[in-house]
Image (cartoon, rainbow, N blue to C red):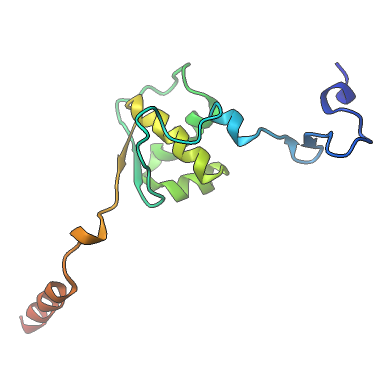
Length: 136
């Protein structure tokens, strides 16, 4: 198979699907199987949610794709946010959310959701605590 067969005629606009310097391009929908939401449960994974690899998760699972493995490897050393994982894996956040949903459903990772602002302590209470600590 020649390069021209893979890429189309170099003279047709938009026919090349890769850049010689960058290598092959894989579209985000190919990494997620066309899915745009994480898993069948549709769990919402916040951008600042913290992702931790399950210590009992096997190192090599044939059911996981290379992108899944890359995310698991990034979480292996330390807990990371979804945004950090997207940057570290060089993948769009939407793709990372879908892939994390897969890992979550397989029990490979745990996702700690951020505390909703309504459940955070009142600012007045925090100021009183600070004042009390200063009084000590």
